[in-house]
Image (tube, rainbow, N blue to C red):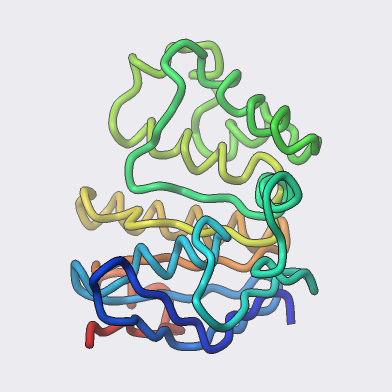
Length: 210
C-alpha cells in the first residue's frame, strides 16, 4: 500500500476530540474526503500532510511513518513526497510563474518534473515568464497545481480545489489532478464539500462532526 492513515484522532484546544475514517490508497488511486464546513476536513488534510501531529494513530506514505518524523527530516520528506494544493494559491508575488515552480525543486532538493513540459500540460506554456499578479483566478490555481506536482510527489492533497469554479472548470480541474496523479504514480486525495466531484471520483470517505 502506498498510503495509509489509521485510527487518527486530534482535538483543538477546548474542543471535543475528532476521530477520522481510515484511508488506504495505491499508486494512481484517487479518493474524496467529503464533509460540511466545520466538520474537520482541513484538520484531516493537515494530519495527512504531517502539518499537524495526531493525538493517536499514524500516517504512512511509501512505508515511511510521518507521525514518527520531526523537524527538518519531516519538512524535507514532505517537500519531496507530498504535493499540496491549498484553497488559495499562496504564490510568491516577487517571482514569475516558472520561478514559483523552481522554488519547489529548490526546497525539496529534488529535481522532479521538467517544468516547461508540466506548464504545457496544464495549458500554461505561455505564462512561464509572467508575473503571478497578472494571472486570472483559474490560471493561478493551475500554477498552484503545477507547483504541487513539480517534485513528482507520491501523495497529492487538494483542499477545496473546485469551490469557486463553475461546473465546466470544476470538471477540468478534477480531470487534470487525476491525469497528473496517474502519470506520476501518486495517490490523490481531494478534500471538499463540493458534491459535484462525486461524479468523477466515486471512492470517498465522509468526515462528520461529533
